[in-house]
Image (cartoon, rainbow, N blue to C red):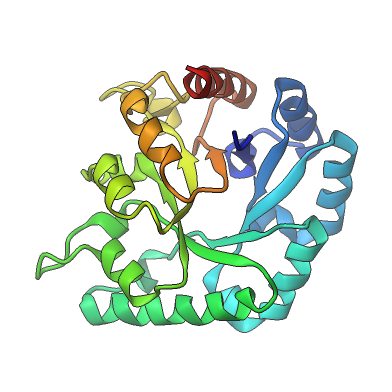
Length: 251
């Protein structure tokens, strides 16, 4: 069983990082996933990880930074012995609006995958909701992206798929061989947890994990990353989510 990881973005509102890492280690996590804002001081983060006994096998890094300097990302991954890098987001103004635009984005991602692959680093895309809004011709942007970039992996964020109105089970089934990592998060019932942007602890929301988990295990995912975009209490979120997932995995 692959250990569950924790996306450190979840705790950005609960500094300092040293406290977060101590809390995660005490809770039972062995791995974390990095995100750009904390990696500006990568050497300090590495030292804190060593002190806490945690590893960072995967990280998020912006597409524009990857295209500007592959070497910088390679050095960053080497510092943490990270084997997976995911491009995490596009600002609204940068998002494709038609089939040709998504295919062009796929070609850009494919080139990055080739370059990182030369250094033994797996590369992929992390989705939000906008990749699941059908285009005017009915095409699904996420499918276009994967088709245009056959050598990238996909870090599938299942709750964002559901929030966009998509069916996570469909995507897990039809793209199982392209999913190299999963973000595990949960949606609160309608009009609940509004102070947490409608997200909740894994296992406490509306995501049908007992149905989805076997499909998750049937993918190529090498990492299962727990995340919450805005927890009011990150220690509560981390502990309850890990307990729920451990019970699910052992059940």
